[in-house]
Length: 525
View 1 (cartoon, rainbow, N blue to C red):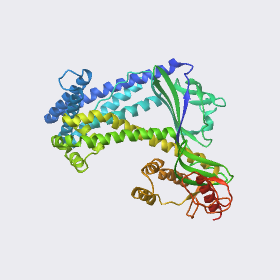
View 2: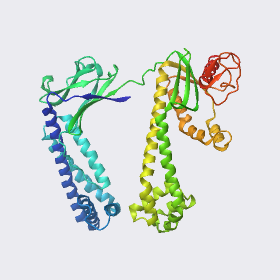
View 3: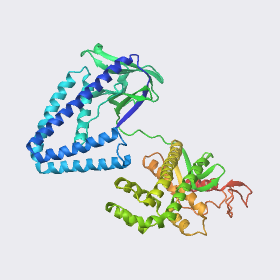
View 4: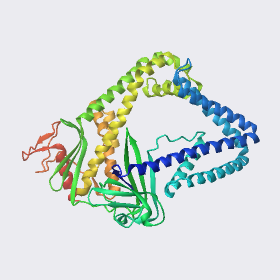
């Protein structure tokens, strides 16, 4: 199993050494870009001389591409709006590139021979160019692989390679053709060394070499923050020194790629736990789960109040957009007949479900790429696009945060327990009952069910169970919430969270009482 460990570095003791080799790498890359452009022009000239139809299609494509580039350099020279001009030019570039591909299809075998000859000349000249540089051979090889991959993508998509203007950023590599144990980085590896103890250590990274001897290595030393150790059984396969620009400063990182024997052995705790899942509004947020452990401790999982407020704001935005779509639909509907022919299926979908804000937002986006919007749709689109996009972005972030809260909750429980008892509930039946039976649950609580997303929490428990972190016991037992876990008296429950038992007089939280009864049922199995 391959895994990459990333460690932060401070500036090296000799920044000029690293900067010099990164600058040489950028210079060689730019020379290879120039070589690619020359090789590609020669290829097109040879192909055009033998097949004039292909040459004409290539000229049209280049003219469209240059027009798009000129517009991006100096926008606003035409009377039309800049986005409309760019959309038209992009479409022309795509169409003319398709025409080039169609012209080449009947000449597949002939083009293949010319392409092979052109690639062979490029590789020969590129190897000579990189060989004349002072880059260490691993960096030369990595650069060649990178430019070949970028060249293939550019030729496939009809684009061009880009030059590199920042000569202080890039990647230097140290490959290990024969992987070495991670323990050898302390004193036995000549190219890469990690010295010191604790978190603050020193990384020595080979940037260049003057010969084949151990003392011929030219290493850069970096103060290193080693926040986690490498596995003792790991075999190091590759190390990368990555230099990035953050603002006006440079940031250094080392990426160490290791191979381990297999999955780590997971340690299970010796406690049992039971979880009562549901949704209940409290003073601090939305309670989703209550946990009781076999040692008597209890925990609660809640979505915080500020998350709930953000969700309310997001739903208000969505509601306002939907109301606007319903109100403006009578004026927009007649104008939908003016939509481009390629968008007819979108128009038919909106007609079948009038008032859908998502459909209008999608139609406005696609329509604006092809032609000017109709007046009423333009008014609605400009007035509500920001609200719609803000609501969609906020919903995405809120759901991601909820998933992170649930994942962290399950991960925190896992090391403590060996078994977890969960009440066996049919969530689909529960959802249908809440959706159709307005006398059983009010609209507000139906919204709380959707926010709690019990199925998401259950999915994380199932994922951890499959990974072997603990065993999940799904128990179906009656009257878990009503029976007092102290004396067993069956009580009549209401809306208050705290209940006083009619049998023994003890007070307990409904959710933790359910979890305690569930834990006892699990232990008696």
